[in-house]
Image (spheres, rainbow, N blue to C red):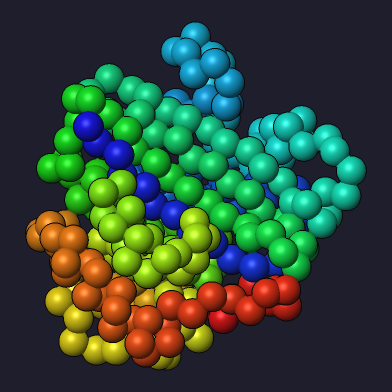
Length: 242
C-alpha cells in the first residue's frame, strides 16, 4: 500500500490569512504543473466523498476557507490550520495539510502532502518526483527542514535516533534551510539541489532513479546529525529557521 509523505516544519512566523492563502495558491498551481491528473480537483477537508464541492485553488477562495475553518481566539498566536484533498481516477489519494501563521514559541508551523493508494505504487512518476515536490514546498513555504519518507523508513529513523514527530531528519530526501545547508557534508550518495532561498535538497533517490534502503537512509541521518545539520530549533523558538 502506497503511503508516502512530503513535509516541512518551521518555527514562529506571523503571517496574515492573505499571506498564507497566497503561499497555498502558488503551491497548488505549481503542483498542478508537475502532475495535473493527480493534483486536480481539490476539495475541502470533510467527508472525503467525490460529491464534495471543488474548491477553487485561488488565493481569495483559500483565504475565505481559512477564515471559515479558524474561528477561535488568539489566531495570531495559534496560527491557521486547514487541509485539502484530491482523488482522481488512476491517481493516488492526496491530502495537503497546512498549519501556518503561528507566533507561538512552543508550537511548530508545518505543511504536509501525503500520497495514499492501494492501486498506485511507488513506481508512479509523481512519487518518483517527490524530492522535486519537496523543493517546491520549501520554496513556497520557506521552512526550516523537510523530508520525503515512507512509513517503514520513518519508523526506523525515529527509533534509531529517538526522535519526536517534528524533529529534523532525513528520509529518501531531506530539505535543509540555508543555515543547515552550510553544515551539510558533501559526498552522500545523493544529488544536491539548491533552492531559491539558499536552502538545499539532498535527494537519496537521485531524481527518482534509485530506491535507497533503510540502512542508506540511517547512514545519511548519522552523517547529517554529526555535522549539526539536523539539530532541533532551540525551544522556546525565537525564529522560523536555524
